Length: 158
Image 1 (cartoon, rainbow, N blue to C red):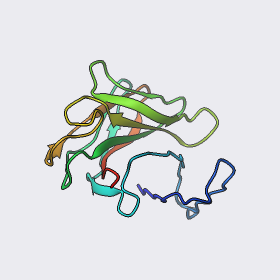
Image 2: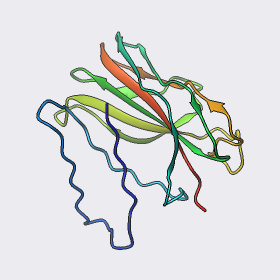
Image 3: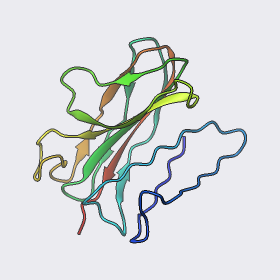
Image 4: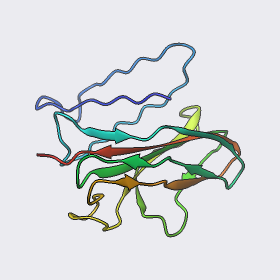
């Protein structure tokens, strides 16, 4: 699994073309997401280790915990699962909220979803609160297949 990020510049706009390259042995999905109020010089505070599993239909895709070093980080759970007609959703009562999703219905080899923490456990709303450990968080896959979950903490803007 690989993740890449880019900080937008003043010249970026809706028609800005971004190009990503992968080796021929790598199957990948690219989803562009814009987050506001994130530190533009050093956006990533911490990244959990990836948790890879082979789950059954209705199985849980989980992240490991992440330990923040900055207060009021934005937590983002990233989930992907392979299989035809795969779909990823949040279980009832989850503290996460959908941000972006890409399904595999004719688009790519897997389903990708990003969810952010929206529970008011810190101030301002949607942030983690004080420094410490957060997670694990889970999502549910509809079809059997390999899956991966990663938790990111993004530093608040200055």
